[in-house]
Each structure stands twice: as structure tokens, then as C-alpha cells.
Length: 148
Image 1 (cartoon, rainbow, N blue to C red):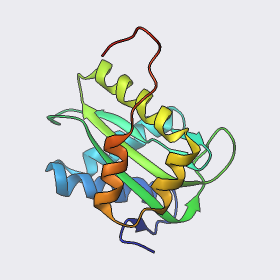
Image 2: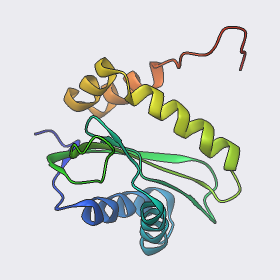
Image 3: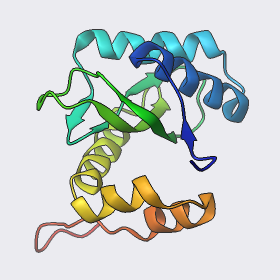
């Protein structure tokens, strides 16, 4: 296993792990981050299916959107619509008032993670820099005539 792969015991443990990652990188309270992510999960699972979930939330005090990827050593139950356990989580936090940005990022993440080739690469790439490069190079499919 690579250093990109983590061992967790379930959804709660995975979200606690993500909160620790964000605490170290964003300087925000781990408990606030965890509570934010859990509150969203209580509204309904953020599992997409095909072994992927996008836990997310809006957080006061966050300056800009931040994401963390967790690849799990063993898949966990996440309440996904297809009933499959989750092995890949992309955890997203956005500033509290960034509603439109939140929706746009979620849409692009869902589109990216629904591509089988991209999911396979995200599960198998061993070097963090290579993983970041693959994600950064991905281009969403936009409807004709739409310019961003």
C-alpha cells in the first residue's frame, strides 16, 4: 500500500481522519470540521456509488475551498445508492457563504469520479504528485456553447 492509502474502521472513522487532515492544513478546529461533515451525512449519504463518496460541507472561517482524497485499505459501508462499499473518498470543504462554488465543485467532482478510467487511476497511482497532476489535468465535459 502507498502512503496515499489509509486504514479506517467505518464512515465515522473516515470523517474523523479527514477532519485531522484539514485541521493540519487549514488551521481550523478538527471537531468543527468533523461536526460539519457528519451533519451533512445525517441529511443523506454522500456516497455516489461505484465505490466512491464525496463527503462535503460549508464551514465558517474557511478562506477558500479545500479538498482531500482518502483511499481506503478496506472498503467501508457508506449508504451509497448502489449498495457498494466505498473505497475512495474525496472530501470537500467550502467557505460558509460559497453556495454556488460548492455546487459547481460538487458537480465537477461527481462528473470526474463517474469516469471509470479516472476512478481506476485515482485508486492505483502511487505518487502524490502524479495523483495531483492527473486531477489537475482533468477537463469536465461542458455542453456546446457554454463558456466558462
